[in-house]
Amino acid sequence: MSNPSSISSRVFVTLISSVVGLGISIYLTLAHFTDVVSLTCPLGSKGGIVDCAKVTTSPQSYVFGIPVAVLGLVYFISMTLLSTPWAWRAENRFIAPLRLGSTVVSVGFISYLLYCELYVIHSICIWCSVVHFFTLVIFIAVVTGWDEATLNRVNV
Amino acid sequence: MGWIAVAFVIVVIGALVAVKVTSSSKSPPSPTSDIAGRNPLPAPVAMVQPVTSVPRSVFDSIGVAGQAADFVVTKNQPSLSLGGKARFVYVGAEYCPYCAAMRWSLVAALSRFGTFHNLKESASGPSDGDIPTFSFLGASYLSPYVSFTPYEQTDRLQNPLTPVPANVQKLYTTYDGSQSGPTIFSAGGAGIPFLDVANRYVSAGDPPYLSSFFNNDTGPLVNGGPGVIAIAQAVNNPNSTIGKAIGASGFIVAANYIAAAVCNVDGQMPTAVCTSKGVTAAKSELAKATPVG
Image 1 (tube, rainbow over the protein chains, first blue to last red):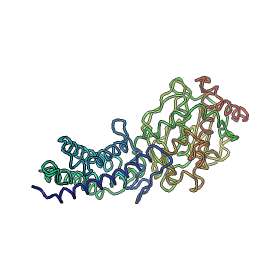
Image 2: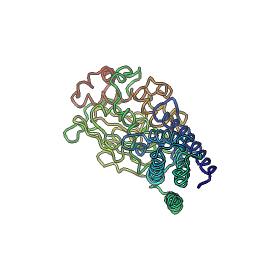
Image 3: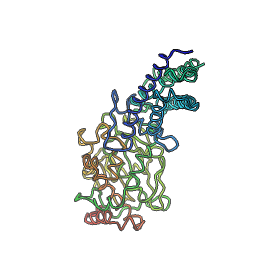
Image 4: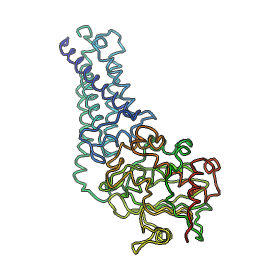
């Protein structure tokens, strides 16, 4: 048996991380599609190692013709739903694998994006890095909590 | 098992960062680093698409906006052609802020006569306004009407970049001037960007309707301005909020003059462009000039 408080902490970590990631994703998506919301770039400078606009307007900002900001938005909407206490508590046997699969795919994706930033674009976007951090946090929480999530849903 | 997966991911990400950090620390800055703009990245679709598809209504509604032509009209000059088409020579430099502004207009205007491929994204020199723009390095242009041959003499740090062939250098010296002084075609002396449209229309230096973008380091595009995407959208729609804020109609005025010059040397083709209201207005202004030569 696992410790119910351990699972509760995973719910807290994944939900908070997802909500923060969702907020940043909304901001990045709005900045991508409108000229009303301009992208601020903390610590950034044009052509410097931190240059948000250079990253978010690069050819790598699209994957299969879809803006990466939109992919991030979809991911964090999904993960916010999958991280609610109700989702962690759900008896449906597909939810835990779906949550695990999503985090595995997402962490692979951020690895690719990090590679693009460091080795192709030669700049990083601070907002993207924050999103990557929370994606990694969610991954760690979900992967290390797999047994608990599948064996002890009712104790959430 | 879960912690093994986590450890694996952290090792992968850590390795990506570590290799980058160590390789960066081993590589001192050099003229070939990215800051010099010698290997510019491809321009994003969101930058290219708005500029290469400015609506005809935009060109027509702005026309020349009361601005005089910056082209000098020549007479009795040998025609300049390449591949059986009128040749359009551009000589500029990656550091040059006026060239940076001009490239937006060049791309907008010439996209009405043909298609650019592999346009890159760049900016004028770090100490020359850092104005966002396209780069023609590694790009190509195909048109049934005009042969466009751009040359960027130096990079963003003013190191030599694209060698200018002797025949083009001769055009530059003849029509743009040299350090020894002005020519009859260029009263103000040598300057870039240099435009030569089939030896019939030449322009040296910064047109007044583009110089405001730099304005001695105080213009709206200095230090990145609103960013390449916003500038591209402003070129596409100068009446937008950002378009008005940066004075994007200047790009369209320059583009109409460029289109008018091309029309006048390529047999007025394509008809839809060369008979359009904006281009016709620019052609009327060019016709008022007294040819020199």
